[in-house]
Amino acid sequence: MLTTPFYDPTISYEDNYEKGPFGAFADGKVYKQKGAPKVDFLKQKVFLPFGIPAGPILNSRYVKSAFEKGFDIVVYKTVRSGFYPCHPYPNVVPINLSGSLTIKKASGKLKTKKNYSEPLSITNSFGVPSKDPYFWQADAKRAMNYAGLGQVMVLSFMGTVMKYQTEKEFIDDFARAAQMSYETGAKIFEVNLSCPNVGNEGLVCYNLSITAKVLKAIRNKIGNRPLVVKVGYYKETSDLEKLSEIVNAYANDIAGINTIPAEVVNAKGEQALPGPNRLKSGVCGHAIKWAGLETVNKLREIRDRRNFKFTITGVGGVTVTKDYFEYKKAGADVVMSATGAMWNPLLAQAIKSKIKK
Image 1 (cartoon, rainbow, N blue to C red):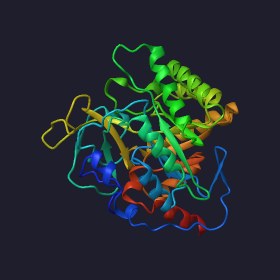
Image 2: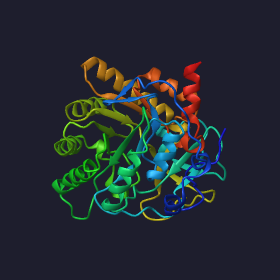
Image 3: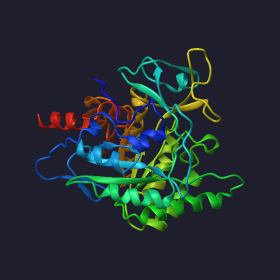
């Protein structure tokens, strides 16, 4: 059942940042976990390897609420080495989509609809906004201190493409963001190589040569602290194999997938989200679960066959409790939900209840 989302899609990102979270995330009720955490997650003990990825967790208030509702792994929204504005409102709209968003369907046009309904699929376009480092560093420090027993915050970051930038300058900016993130004292980091909402930047994770150079530069900044690599959907298994080799050398976990980009139009056939570089936006929710499960299955096979050591975080289309168990069966060590958690803030509690039974 869909409830009031903790991120309100009817108002701007800026208003959500200043006034949110909403719904049950704002009721102050705290889920009480009994016993001791026993599940290993990148050198940390958690009660349940389930959490919320970076997208909707805007600041320390959202992190605090997520922990209070029983999400044991919470990823702080991706930050940059400098201020970066958000795309114009609207940023989240429901998609009129039946079944799965296959790659063939994603090559066509998708239409929006008026209301959010189950099975829940949406498109989002934020552009990976970031506050100035002095601001987000202080806020991230506050956020990680809200973690209770058996909980941990992951700090997500990325580099920024700039006009006339060289490859070295691009890689250096990832390293700069990594250094700034390291200075917060976070226990686990995530590098976002997968966001499709940044115009002409493209997906870094599809350029495997750059990916290797970026991860090496980041590792030199963060020492031996755990690093998660967030990626998109790979059509070719050979690319996932090469990615696995790179991650095994420089990082500790692969998180996939992010969203699947598609052209989204309104009922009149016009671009649904205003502004340049927004004809396509990232579709998430139920419609992309197939792609996340496929990715996890392939990564598990590669890891087991090659005796790699990285863990696997399954993301994409986790909207109800059974989705968590499907991802675990597919081989995910950790499972995360963004869209599902937004509209069902008690999803982690529901999964924990199922496990107890």
